[in-house]
Amino acid sequence: METLKRLAASWEISQDNLSSMIRSMRNVQSYEQYIIEELNMPKRPNDFLLLIRIALVNGVLEDSEMDILKRMGRLMRFSEESVATMVMRERKEIMKMGQVVKVFMQNQSRE
Picture (cartoon, rainbow, N blue to C red):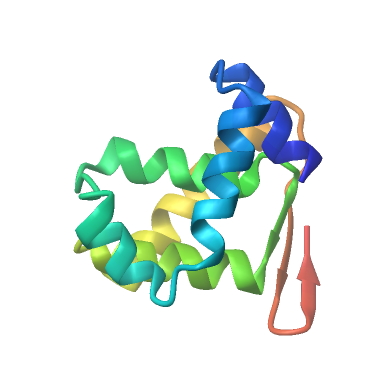
């Protein structure tokens, strides 16, 4: 949650607005439907790369985060292979800047 708060602050989203967004998401039954119908999710690669960067910002990529990225990728019409390639490329870019990104997938950890 602290990472989300820092990210919101860097985008100049107030804590009140962030809290409001979180409250509105609690009642969503289908996130895929919400994203398609309510948010009218754009389908551009740069938009998806932003989602990947958000998932990697804390230095850890877990199964649950990768599952969300795969679902979001499907919504944006990316194959699983494309999603995996984009995640790996962004991870390498972050690691070039000296930040470690650990990957925890299927009960295994990789650095």
